[in-house]
Amino acid sequence: MAEQPVIDLTNQFLIAMPDMADPNFGGTVVFIAEHSPKGALGLVINRPMEIDLATLFERIDLKLEIAPLASSPVFFGGPVQMDRGFVLHEPAGDWNSTVTVGNEIGLTSSKDVLEAVASGSGPRRMLVTLGYAGWGPGQLEEEISRNAWLTVPASTELIFDTPVEQRFAAAFRLLGIDPAFLASSAGHA
Image (cartoon, rainbow, N blue to C red; front, side, top):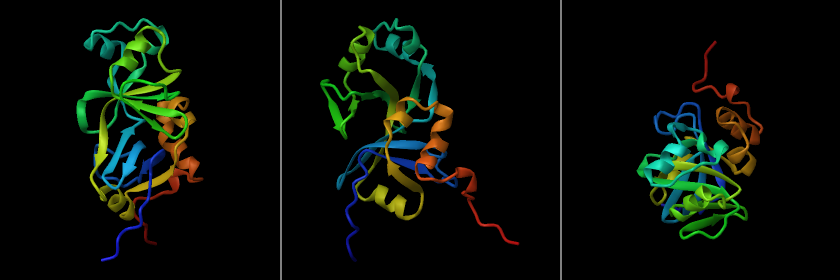
């Protein structure tokens, strides 16, 4: 059997096709932070949870008093390690465990970035998730080959500036597609 061509989806969005059956990923946009032959790691960027940043900070014994940030939602990042926080931020900065994605974005899973946010010296823009989405070797490529996902280069504006409820449609627009025209099954006359 021929080997699959190697693709690198780092710093790309995965956009769930409208007929995605997996309840964890239906209607989602996933930012891929790492993709290698070992697998992929991404964060869902358009599924806010019932918890806000102030509540999350209290749970980890930090006080967040920066008013606009305190009420920001924490996002469902994916079904893996739901008890662990991940911070997608710009600029990438230099925290204890930061993976730099592209030239602008950092993904940090260490508490020091949140401590900096609490003290007012954190990254300029951020999105905080609980959990992440993970794929084993070849798994993501297989899902893409079955048309479960569309891919498009990531946009920091979509991650940090686009209202949450508009991110799914905005990701499709990056491809020049209106999601309303994507039917889950073809009709017959």
